[in-house]
Image (tube, rainbow, N blue to C red; front, side):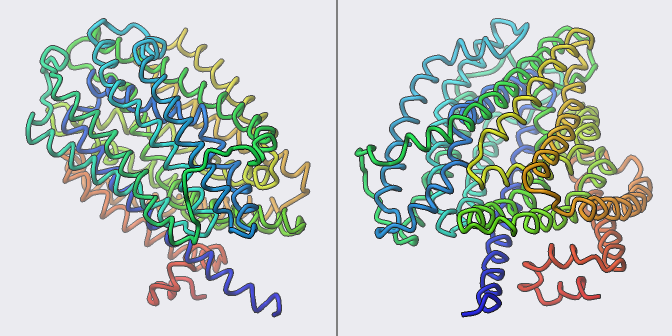
Length: 561
């Protein structure tokens, strides 16, 4: 069969995978937005309880990525692809891998849970005894998430390695459904947050169990549902404790650099979290009526900013990573620059627009997550300020994500580690320097700005190293694409700003009003942007909308020249 004959089915398969993953991520993130907005209604967004719960609920994610996340998400995919070529299609290897994951993650989770108190104390600054006690109680219920994150990651990568991309991306949607139900139950039982109340004095054990236990329940459901589609891979999965012969020594050499990279990066995240906790303590000393953004507001701004990256860049990069891995394994190194260039240019279509849209709509976006209390508008404004600082680094975040996939596909985890380490060291030094000069009430703003700056530096360093190893990948064309799309996005943003101005104070009156404003302004901006890009006859638009256009016939009209 000719190369041309096999290329088209492969392209269609990748398009289906990308569309399925992007749709799953979109639904999951949309539900995540609902969950976050509801949580702000339940406990506020710039309150002690919000920051305390956020601290305990985020620690499991960071710790999992610290101890094993990089191995599961990057290193194992090439190993699973290799194992799938065995006579049993990798059944024995996969069984051993899942068994090993369950054993090690369970042991690590038990140890971490026992150390909940010391962990909380290490990651906070200036918190009162009441804050520390409540945070530790939350952590006891949240830290078991580490185990379920491990199971979710390894089973998800098994499915990805066998072309079952959708389940891994759709499972978080079910997690969010569970958590939305939990938070809704919480509001029904305990009511919504009201400004001016002393949360710490009135908080109960029942509230802790429902909020933190419900969060862990969602993660557990997310992980366990992935076992259902395993049978569709044709693999025969059984408990297998014979870990010898798995090539753990080889994986260990590869993973050592990845582990070092993830440790450095996530240690930096923990240190950022510790510095951000200063704002929580400072809020208690602030005059009445003064809004102080803390860790919850910071993470909410990150949730909003990372949405376009998660929907488009992450989904496309997951498919691209498998293509890059096969290109290296099949000794088709000459295909790497073209794959990378295409990925960067295609992703630029939504990412560049999203960056401008977030800047223009930062106000109503923040209001969406400000809650329903009397200070909801002020809380939303605080989140909006953080969005302005983080959105500018979004295109560079996605570019860096694509660039380092080249090294991972080549089973080179040392280079990404060096990039991660250099950025982490610079970031931590900058963060501690800022904490010495910036008042605690404004420290979160400094960290938000730092996130954007480090994204830019990461992309620049990764670009230099990719070019040094593999030569030019058409960077001039890539940059030109970003610049042209940037101008179109700015023009669309200007139109959106006019529409937003017409809404006036209505846009910030409440959650419903903010949502309506975002819907109208967003629709206008997207329409203008697509019209401008289409009139410029940019092929990247066709590449980006292709997977959806093949399923929605009317959508193909947008890409026609």
